[in-house]
Length: 407
Image (cartoon, rainbow, N blue to C red; front, top):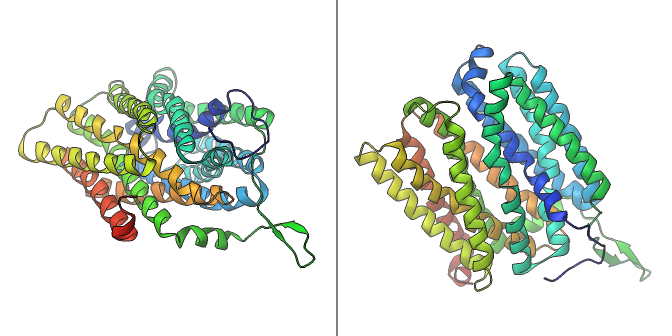
């Protein structure tokens, strides 16, 4: 693999980065089994509790948008530590809250801090690697951190069994505290500072503004096409995450202890596809694998719509189709992120922030609309899921044009 910086790495840095990335899935998935209990305890509707997921996704996206330029300007370590501190404060705020409004506010604080920290993961990878190596490292990190969404619902169900829903957020606070200590102690600064020559011919650091950094990404047509591919693919997955508690536990009658199992099988499928992606990249370029993943994801989504619309589909036939759909994320997200950040070696955190935040924002909007439109049956969920990769394919082709589609 090609390294792009001479600063030494510690052994196991991928595990540290995976732990940081896991912050998002833990905060998103751990409280899913507790949603009905939270609605009862806070005297509100299940719909209002589901909205907290969209609130988190938006806050997470904003945190990444702000954290990306800060990271490129001041460094990865500072941004990570500040973000984790805010996440800890938000988690404690939620655990002590007593109303749905306070829960929403706490989720915003938690999400904003989490976004600031997590956005640095791809930046650190890009500081060190490029091309196929970058995509492979990112797939390895994603594979390691798959334990988070796999275990998160079980963790939530466990704390719900031995205590109450608030203990889930106390756990998140403790996890972030441990992570903050480890990253502060072991993760080196990896930021690459671009330089220019001043009028006297001396080298000086070049630090463009946040607006300039984002504009550099937005005006890059190929980068923008991959950004939309990742965003719409993420929207499909977050539609499932947002609406599945109501569909699985409400429509199909799955118990709070059974839901984590049905959720976890999707994470297993995603983990397997990430491993396959690492091997496929030995023979194909990331962009080629991404496009294949999009097409397969759309085909699976179409099959789900037909199955649900025309047959009284039992849950044991729906779950495998959703597993395949979610698994395709392994071919879309890692390759899309690595391809975009390859275009911006000295602006990688900002590029990563824009791609990732676009995915979370699209997921919040599309998932929130799906939750509002849903009548509790699986049809709305799978229809919106199927639409997302189609929109991603269409947007990529429209932006890239004929000349870049097959590159």
